[in-house]
Image (cartoon, rainbow, N blue to C red; front, side, top):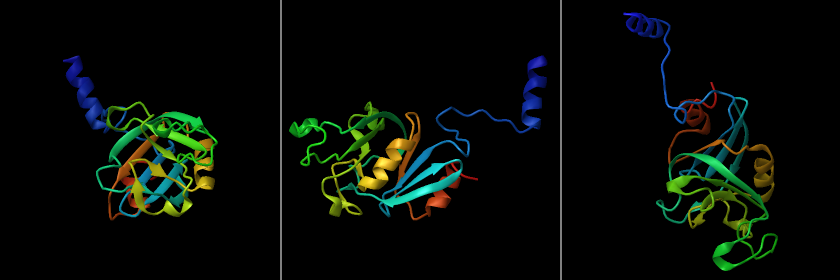
Length: 170
């Protein structure tokens, strides 16, 4: 009986329970990438504080879609695939790496990073990662915390519409 009253009270005041990954409070740090426009929005304090062009996968399936979490950050990342040290001008990852846990990875396979080919920004050209212009990437790196959410989609909607739908802004 007490449990029934408690549940009735919760419903009466409109409280609902959702998994931690599914809920967001406006003001939490949030990154949205729209593959349809190759644009990224950085959201803090319930506002879009930066929007920038990006490069995404050369085929639609290469850049994963969904809600992910930033799990690792690195300055001057090492490029393992071709054994290129961080800071080397040949390094295609640029000066920063913000890794997220897409497709069961630990943030070391998929990420937001720079590029040694600035002309690639805005194009469908990567192997799945998201390339940013150097200045935007370095700002984002300084501001984004590990644990921030990264939402990647292909949508005709505006960044404001997507951010509202995800609860990142009101």
